[in-house]
Amino acid sequence: MSKLKDKFKNIFAEIKSIKHIEIIIAVIAIVIMLVIYFGTSCSPDEKTSIEPLPGEYDYYTETVRELETKLSQIEGVGDVSVLVNWSQEAEETSNGLPKPEGVIIICEGGNNISVKLKLISSVASYFGISENKINVLAKSK
Image (cartoon, rainbow, N blue to C red; front, top):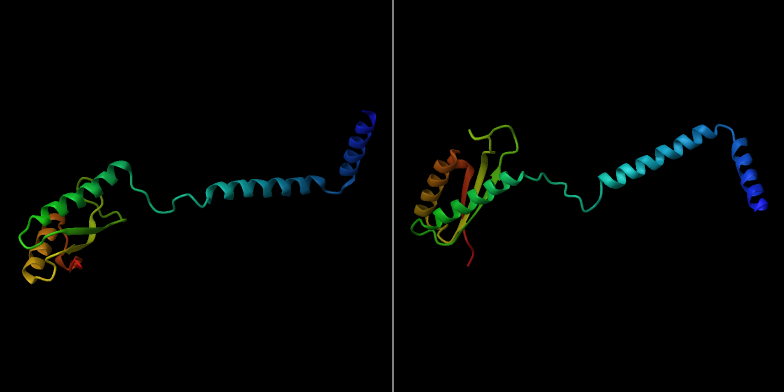
């Protein structure tokens, strides 16, 4: 046991004899803190996209689902898919939810000009956006 004590005393004496040991210890401590900080804040499985609040996600999903349901009931439209580009800026609707910036509609009747006009007019009215922000495409067969 005395040999072990002597070894620790020798090691401690060597460490004490190093000039500016406080600075070296401080630098090591800072490096360890930075590794811990960046290791936890930049983990690869962390999502980097903006995640909507739970209530907002329901709003987005339900709005698109309702729109798809209603548009598919229009004569000549057939099966329909809707993609909405939501505003990320302060421009919001009266109830505080983001406003759509653009809409893409893909449907079976997308080649028919009459169907396109009905869809564009309907979506522009529904969202209160300009008709030039709505694009209707034909679904591939």
